[in-house]
Image (tube, rainbow, N blue to C red; front, side, top):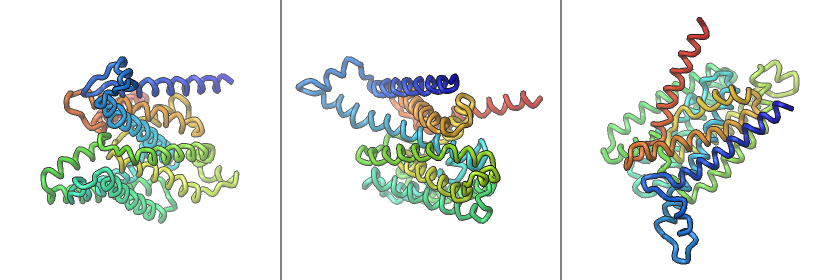
Length: 334
């Protein structure tokens, strides 16, 4: 009973913090908007500039930050449970390399100047699907062993990263600048027309993975334990791997490579809510959304009027986090 009350309090607090952070993020930016300016949105003669800033620039960015943070965190949680490795996340499995390669082709070829909102995400998504397929194919020879998956992902990432560097060497400088901004994780290029579709896919994905929470618990305990309750371990891993990969592919293709979210959030939330995936997955979704939203808000205002790519902020925080974690583990072993 105490455990249920504790979880309820945690989820309520996370939800309130997320809503509050979304409101703050709507008002803060290169141009500050007062809470009293809301009345101009409902006036007879509306403030067109204010309406455009809130509904067409900031709101899509806020929603995309929430979706991306939730998706990356949940995917990281699932991959860690499947691989039984706390350092596993979507990018360890080659997803970032595939997205970078696909997007690089679109940017370097100049397609981003024609229809960046559609073509860049499509090319990035294609690159992700290719990398996931290669990792899936390679690791299948070892029955999806944890080490084989991570090793395959690292190898694929290195290959795609090398190809990306080759493309940049051959590309005009102006195209490389735009591509680098995208690769560092940028929520500025969100297409408001695609956003509802991405939101639906992300929501369905989180629900499906939460539904598989108890089965993920069995997988984390080991294959033999899963077989005793009639779970086809290999088939289930394939399904979960596909769902998490597609979720990540869709969000990464929209906003670029944003690292460490899928590593940091599951690790922290395990300390707070435990390792039960039926609770951990939705907790990761809320906290991941909150984390990335805060990071993006900081990225927008930390060096005004320049907007720093959010991937830079998450990488700095992630690096500091793992240095602290390493020092702590070193002390505990003494």
